[in-house]
Image 1 (cartoon, helix red, strand yellow):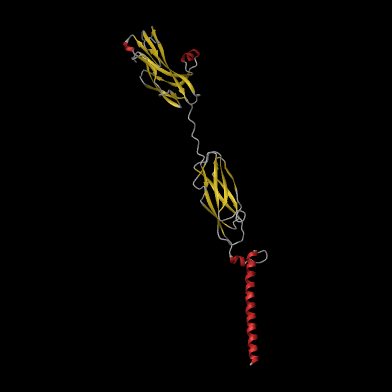
Image 2: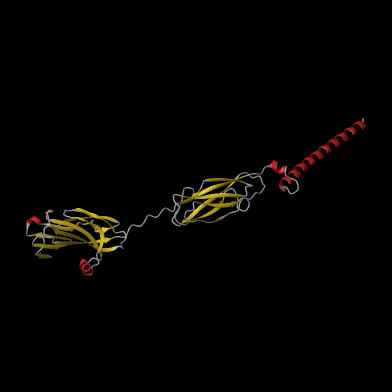
Length: 320
């Protein structure tokens, strides 16, 4: 578009507007050419958060005769004509002294605006210092305000057994297996657990357990409790396995997915022999009775052999 303008403060001129550029050419070369334009923001004309805006604000080149100022406004939508008709322009808060090419106009924070298409308007106003007459030239520039990037989600962390091995005495009643949450604690997560036999047998050496441990947001540890059964039989140390699986809630399982729980034997033969009183263990007492009965049998055998020998000797003496 080309407009012939007459009676301007700086004389007659021609104003042109094509694509995203506009300018004013004066008949008097002292004030021409005029450059009023917003520079491209980026390759996609997309704004996010705070953006530096650059542009040219030249409307007359003789600062002794022309005083130039600018301001930047915005309007929702992509049609500046509608914005002009409805006067729905809002200030970006950017303004200052003009008269320069490709200058930094200012920084615009668009983070409070809804994502969508907007039009920027650069208004450059020049005042003739001698006559006091003024003129304002506008350049319009469509931009797109993109949604603000989402805040990064804090890590949920990983769940693992606190150690690869645990120990508990056979008379320790309960073993406590700690499951820790490492590398983050955001959100609610969970993990399944279960026990399985090694050399120890569920039901006679320990009580089998399984279930799900739930970790609320910020919780860093939970405990698996396993009841230990004291059978009073000397059978050496035994072990069972504890395993984690099926993590949920954005978590994973760390290095210690399984662990070994060793049950340390607290029984011995000496303990059994010394504990045969009322209410004591039955098996050691029966063993003691068996030993004594065998000793008695041997003494009876020796006594019978000795009696036969004595009798045979006395018979031989009487025969002489």
